[in-house]
Length: 310
Image 1 (spheres, rainbow, N blue to C red):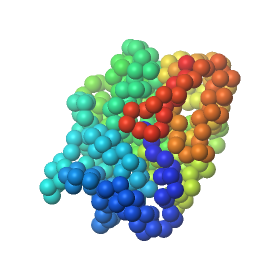
Image 2 (cartoon, rainbow, N blue to C red):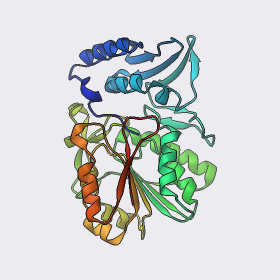
Image 3 (spheres, rainbow, N blue to C red):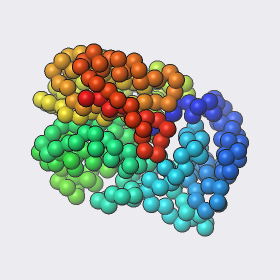
């Protein structure tokens, strides 16, 4: 689950302006928003629960206010200064509510299990099958896919954000120690070519191709890119049964590989980004050319719908 890239108009090039706007927005909805020591805390109207963000991720504070329960209940809170607190201000391990195998290190905001279950329900993965996780972030969904396909199956976790990759690799290593199997990591962005792209590296769920973003130009880095066909060749994937794409509006580029869809027809699920610039209609029309039928369904706990394609 990723967040709206512009936080619906609240973002500014001036971080102080953004924090002030978030504070006003929170006050208007009964929340208390405070900034100190490079962190932003969002306290619920009852004054008992708190979500803490890194100040660099102030753009996401409005989403936390709008869907507070969704973010607060994703992981187990800790009691800090009389507040039940979920601290996403730096990469740290959290216990995901409903999943007990091991803690997961999230670079920032957590991936809730409720969304991952929607992916899994649609994918209906079986032992020995192959899945590709585009926009793997912390790798949590990749681990769940690996659980589903077992040691005889394959999962490729694709992530281009160098900050996210640190947590992703740590989680995969810990998972492998416990299960003796693990996804493989592709440090790149799936795109329409292999020449590399400029990528916004922010260590959060909203990391994406710089050409699709309107913020954070100072954090843009050149990263490798690959088509889906070349990714399959690189990892010797004869078949692909499922693709999860959480790539901030980059689906038209990632799914433009006609050769891949000529040879394979995996189930696909992607998140329809909230921005009006990232409408899913064009992506659905593209996939329909490859024989897919798509439906839009609500995403549990989020305003952004999921698109399921068969």
